[in-house]
Image (spheres, rainbow, N blue to C red):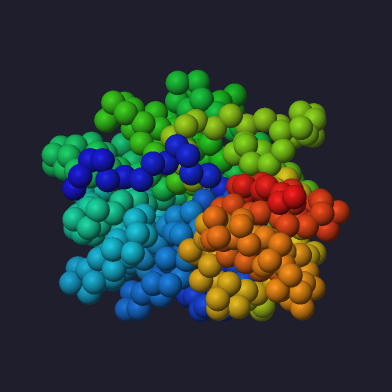
Length: 437
């Protein structure tokens, strides 16, 4: 694998979401509905669940990638019944070929529920896990993709920091240089209902914390900043800090353990808002007193919130941030406000037709906006702007919704015919705006 094949991560937005908690929302209509909102919010990552015998459609993956959104593919691979490598290979190859380069195999291998009952108590648990994980990781590496080291449960039946240290030491001992060179950790950003800065500084700041024992006056990795502890382990074993992708950021615990009615609690919503501000998304003009400033290390490349949306009547319905692209929670509304997203304007958030979708994922270069209700005066319009049209050859139209899909927009209307809020949204999305006299 080429050591330079990893995409640049420094410029990518850290903001991400877990998509729906199922595999039923990968149609063209779903992409049409959610892509405009994701683009407006500046989302850089989207965690997607795949089936083992059917791929997420290529158009869905391509649509995200062309909008600057990197998918993280979660394979439904369990230690209870690991699949045949040959069965997984075509799926890994397809996703890698399409550009979906981040693959998660397995989940929480340090808890006994992840293992068959007769295997958990056997010796060399970490080595036995690696025997199952490494062939899949090698498959991703062969296809120029990046296998995530799976997220561990902070604490866990097998203490997570001990598990991670033993696994990294074993990978190094096996001389798996390609994996070590491209190693990316996945970690849960659960709070355990503790302050977001619990455990900040890792073992260097809290040296008295030990596996299975944390003195009353000390702190440990069982909190949002578990990544500080994981980074310290990477540095100690590998002499470097690995990139980390945070999953389910800000949740108090794993979704299956969450209590009802907690999802709209002020504490949770405030945690979400503080994490949002830590990513530097949105306005920096807010008063510092309104939110605690979290300082996140540069190795955190992606912070994903649970959940973007979900179908009605599912166990996780109450945890959705959005429904049909409309915010459902205080944190979602706050994020929209920071990003200047006008969610009540159907012009900018309606379902795009097929042609508009094609343009959304293949942006126009130049759009000449002639204003609304000028279709009946095309002849005079073309005569008036003929020189400009011949020189620049723009796409010509009457829709600001379509204009927003272009890199450059020339407005052939008086300033009072373009609402200021729409103009600000277009500029925030990176559109170059100029006016034609």
